[in-house]
Amino acid sequence: MKVLITAPYHDEAKAKLNEFFSTIDYRPWKKQGRAYNEKELLALLKDSNADALITEHDEVTKNVIDHNPSLKFIGVCRGTPSNVSLETAEKHNIPVFNTPGRNAQAVAELFLVGVISLMRKVVPAINWLEDQKWEKGAHTSYLQFKGHELANKRVGMVGFGDIGKKIAGILRSFPCEIDYYDPYAKNVDPVYNSTSLENLFSRCDIVSIHLPVTEETTGMIDATLLSKMKKTALFVNTARAAVVNQQDLYNALENNRIAGAFLDVFDAEPPSHTDYQLINLPNVYATPHIAGASFEVEDHHSFIMNEQLAHFFNEKNPVKIESHE
Image (cartoon, rainbow, N blue to C red; front, side, top):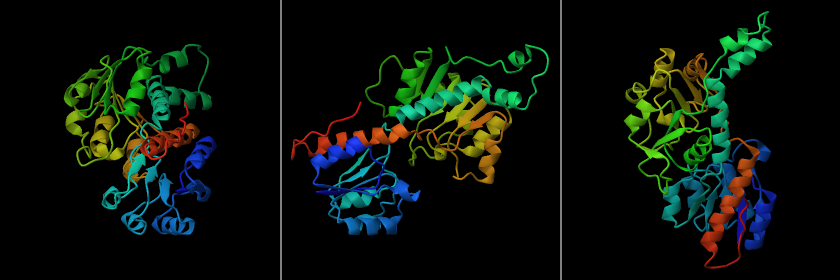
């Protein structure tokens, strides 16, 4: 079997795949600085004469799949295969694999960076120092930038998949109390508190969003829920902007109905004028959708994909594709 890989793939993981499949054609999208569009992907599949595809962000559209109906599988190195026409793949009986949890550690670490920076007023303190505003008086900065500790706060996770659980596991050591809302969550440690969405918003000191975009979740976080938050509470979104009504969030922050927010995702990317109004609020810390942007994420997704494929093909060919710890 010949596999076309357009996702960035770790050398060791690629070597393991090469032991399992006859030929690997490696053409990562990063060399051109953007994902392959439909036309380019069609040309690549034709040129490589591939039997299977491992992709990341490329446009695996209905047209791409209809022109390659004999693909043995499509691997998507993402938490959700949102760039693939799943309906078309199912029509042609093409299995689709993805890599849940590939960026869990990266997102968890940026969550900590953002939340602690916000609580400890790190950014304005750095700006104050670089602007040479430190005059005589040893206690000026100590008083002006005194913040809060993360320890002993109640943190609510809206969505409790791989990322939410990873963050929760880290927060336990501060320690923090963890609430979560997720009617689909499985195998959850009983140390965490399952609760209603309304209760989570009303009693948590930090509310963190970890939802995919679906018909059910789009716009789910709105003024009704935000109005239940404590005035001292923080809102965090490192997941998807579409699950939050951004105007309602802006109103809550602009009117100081909640203390602040750490945001990594926006309605438009690059941000629109409306997004920048939210980003530029003094009680908002914002980063440009980089929560999952660690070099190690590419290592993780390579080995997770190998595990998925090894499990799927094991009955036909018991060659083991080893995982990476």
